[in-house]
Structures are given as structure tokens and as C-alpha cells.
Image (tube, rainbow, N blue to C red):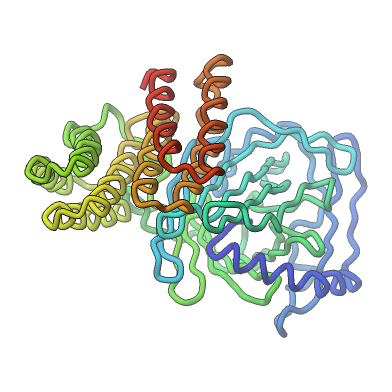
Length: 456
């Protein structure tokens, strides 16, 4: 499954495909009988990885074939896909800021696995490294009747310079191999399961190290978490924490890399509309962006001063700590950029501030509305890249818009979808032709139309 340094691990997995295939020759037995509602769970790649072997088969809890009768209702508290509308994780990879957004997409997908039709939910995972699109995955999940959650495949797109560079790691249960348990119904210390287990494509083996832990979440202590160790095909290990109401909560890779939950809804949702200071920050960040484009530094400084006052007032109330820390850093950087009259830097920092403000607004507003605002913000990001003659940035921004489109398409209506898709194609055509000025113009009009069509 997606995780930090996914691209690096996947390239290692590609190199190790022959190794995995050879290891499969030592595979374990344990096929179950399939029926109208039960599918096989077939262990495949057993063996050693850089001297460290898989756990003994007797500790595996994913060998019995699951049965599915209400598979799209995923309520397992440690992986509550059908309950989670949107999550934001923050951290760093290779000393660069790392951000992921996961969004539950509407509808289900029918996946045939060993003759059984399983309804699966789709979760869109989008990762950004240093503000640039890094990876997208569409993950498919289903819950078995015993409460365990099964991973039924993913479509993977790793990006470099704004374009898809690698799709290795893409797989689908039934087409490429078996589905895989991603969370037991009631994990116990010592339990072992494989969230990915297809020879030559993907492999992960998880060992539960502890249960019943209390972890610090965006709104305070969260009891009932589990700690796991995940073995990868290249022999590396990654520590992960899963927490009730959040699912994947914290990942720790090598070299100080970190990805941790910053906010999840509805788990962290708050009643009532956003505080007035938050709304002020949202509109003012866009205002500073426009003022920096016009080089109106006195006005930008005045607005920035009021923004700092608003953020100081908000900071006196409890805020999700990871978002608050990043927002404070970006507010400081924005103030400095305006003082130094650096238009490109000021525009970028205004967008960064607006992004964190949207994250905080996610606690008060429906995730669908926030995704519309994210779409609009990325049209502004594209314009900033175009002004800097950064074609890779422009290209990546187009891809982000195409992916966010999938989150908001159901709000557009049939005619609206056709219009927005047509505008996205025109934007992509201009970008592919290297015409950044035209791309910026298309983006500005596109952002305005999406807001109009969705009532934003």
C-alpha cells in the first residue's frame, strides 16, 4: 500500500521481482474452499528478504478465505474507510515537507475474486513532496463478515516533473492474484498478515507489536491504537500506528522520515461554522496573493498585519498541532516575503497559508466544499508556476486538478461535468504545447466556473 518513499520502495520491488518469483516456489499451502460468498486467501511469497525472513505461517491470521455480504460498509475502527470522508497527513521525507490527502470517492467498484462479486469502496490518495505532486493511488477496500478489512487492489501513479513516471505496483484482486487482509477484526499482539501479496508486483507483511495504546491525536489523546512493523520486499521495515477513527495514523521510515495524521473528518469535526478569524484568513490569503501580483506592497503588508492578528487570536484556542505549526511557519514566511517585496515568494506563501487554512476549515465545513476550494486554489497555484515559467510545476498542477475533479464531479451535474471536462482538456492541451500563458488563462477561468457551478 502507499506509504512514505513509495517511489523508492517500488523501484526496489521492480528490481526484486525475480527474487519474489523464486521465493514463491517455497510458498505455503492453505487454500480455502470458495463458495458463493467466500473467496480464497492464498499465501504466496514466503522466504527471506536480505536475511530477514517472513513470520512463521502459524502466526498468519489472513489464511482463511473471507466471506462478504455487506462489504462496502467498512466500520472496522482501525480502518473505517466508509466513515472517513477526508484525511490530511503531514510530515517530511528526505528533509522536505510531505503532505497527503485521502478522500473517500462516491460509489463502489465490483471486483471479481475467485468467482465472487465483491463490492469495494474507493479511496483516493494524493501525496505531495515539497509542494509538488508525488504520487496518486486509487485504493480498493472491502470489509469481510468477520469485521476484517481486505485490500483488493490499487491503481498507482508516481509523478516526476509533473508527469506520470511509474505505474509499477498497480494490481487488482482476481486479475493479478489474491486480495489481502489490511486490518484484522480484532488485532492481537503477534498477529501477522499481508496487506499486499502478489508475486512480482507487491509484497508487505505486517506484524502487530502492541495493542491498546493511547496516542496523541489532533484533538487530544486517542485510546485503542495498535503499533505494527511492516516488512517490505527489499527487506526494509517501516513502523506504523493505526488508531480508532483514523486508520493509518503515523508512519516512521528511515532517516527521520515521518508521515502522521494531521486531521480527519468526521472524527475531528466541530459543530458550527468556521470562526470569523478563520474565514478572514481564508479571504485575506487570496487577497495578498492578488496584491503581490500587482506589486501593491503597502496594501499587502497591511492585510498581512491583520492576518497575523487573526492567527494569534485563533492560536489561543486549541488547534490541530501539525497544521498549526505549518501555518505559523508559512505566515512568518509570507510576512517576510512581503517585507522584502518578492512577488513570486509572496504569492507562493499566500497559497501555502490558504491551504493550511482550508485544512482547519475542514473541521467545520463539508469535505465536498473544501475540495471545491482546493480545486480553485490549485488553479491559482498553476498561475504562480506559469508566472515563474515553471513548466513542470504547471504540468503537475494540471494533474492535481484532474484528480480533484474526481472528488467533486458528482456536485457538478451532467452538464457541468461536460463543461469542466472540456475546460480541463483545453488546459491540458495548452500545457502540453508549452503555452504557459494560455494555461494560466484557462486555469483562472476554470477555477471561477467550478465555484459558480458548485455554488461556491
